[in-house]
Image 1 (spheres, rainbow, N blue to C red):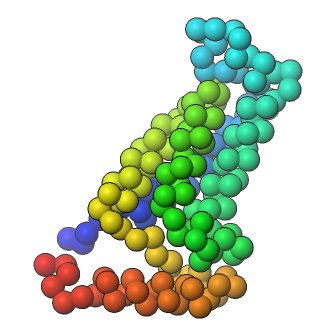
Image 2 (image 1 turned 135 degrees about the vertical axis):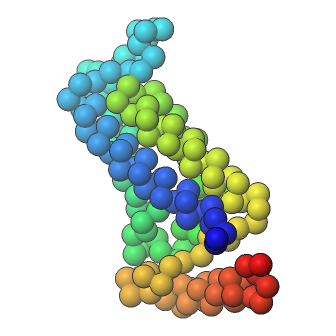
Image 3 (image 1 turned 180 degrees about the vertical axis):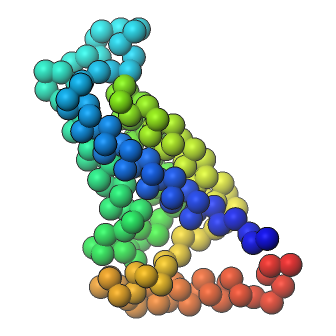
Length: 161
C-alpha cells in the first residue's frame, strides 16, 4: 500500500467543507438561525435583520475554494503553498460555520481537516503543486521547480519500503 499524503486528504476535506459552507450560507439567507439560540437570543442580531454571519460564511467558503482548488491567481504563490496560513485561517472559518445553524456540519469538517493539516505539518510534509496547474497558472517556473523537488523527494530509492 502507498503512504497517506495527509495534506492532499485535508485538501479534499476542505473542498467538501467549503462547498457545503457556501450552500449553507445561501440557505441561511432564506432561513436565518443561530445554532446557539437555545442558550441565548443575544446572538440573533448576527443573522437577522441583516445577514452578517451568512455573508461572512459565503466569503469564507468562496475564499477556501479559491485557496484549495486553486485559482490561477493564487496557484504557486507562498500563500497557496503554506500549510501554516491554512492553520491560521481555518479556525476563523470553522468558528463562523459553528455559529450558524445551517453550517454546523462544515464547521465540523473544517475541524477534521484542520487536524489533518496539523498532522501533515507536524510530520514535515511539504505542500507541492500538481501537474494540472502547469497549464492554468502564470507562475509556471515556481510550479515546475516545486514539482521537480517533489518528484525527487517521492522517488528516492528505498522511500516506499
